[in-house]
Structure formats: structure tokens, C-alpha cells
Image 1 (cartoon, one colour):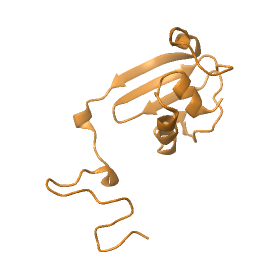
Image 2: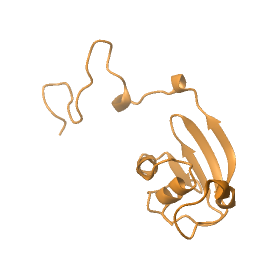
Image 3: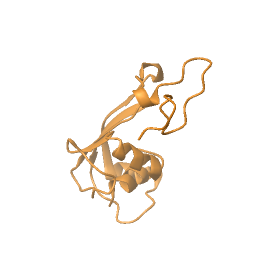
Length: 119
């Protein structure tokens, strides 16, 4: 089963699109390696998900054979080893994520503010 689908079905990340974005950004590792969202999850894998709002470390106990894991059955598929909610005020923005200074509108994607687009 694909990692992004596994993260969604086990409710570690609520939406598959967000799980894919987290994998693409390097926020998800499997057994210590940064992976793509399509990597196959296997029993015994250790997952680390480090998002701006929370951190989760989990072990894969079993891979679901089909979609829709009932809420009460999640413990059958994952063991949460560590979970931590982060204080949103402690999040350090990257350059591309930095909010615009007060009174200024953020620039559209691809614009540098230097009279043209990046390229």
C-alpha cells in the first residue's frame, strides 16, 4: 500500500493530498529515509511525520488489505511511539513561507518582487 494512502487510512494525516505534500516536502521518513508518497509501506516500518503543528513517530503493525479502516481498528495497524503537539507560535517560517510585512500583500507564486518572475 502506498505511504500517502496508509497515512490517510490510519488517520495520521487526515487527507491523502496533505499526506502526499508532506512526503514531497521531506516531512515524512520511513526507517530514517526521506521517501516519496508512492513508496510501499510494510509491516515493521518506522514512520516519522514532522509537520508544523505536530510530530508523530509510529510503527506499522499491519498493512490494511483494503480501504476504509474503522476508527476503532486503527490500533491494529499502527503503534504510536511518540506524539507531540507543537506550539504554532514556535514555528519558524522558511523564506518562501514568511508572511508579508504588515501593510503589504504577499507576492503571487513565481514573482520575485524585483520587476519580474523567477526563471
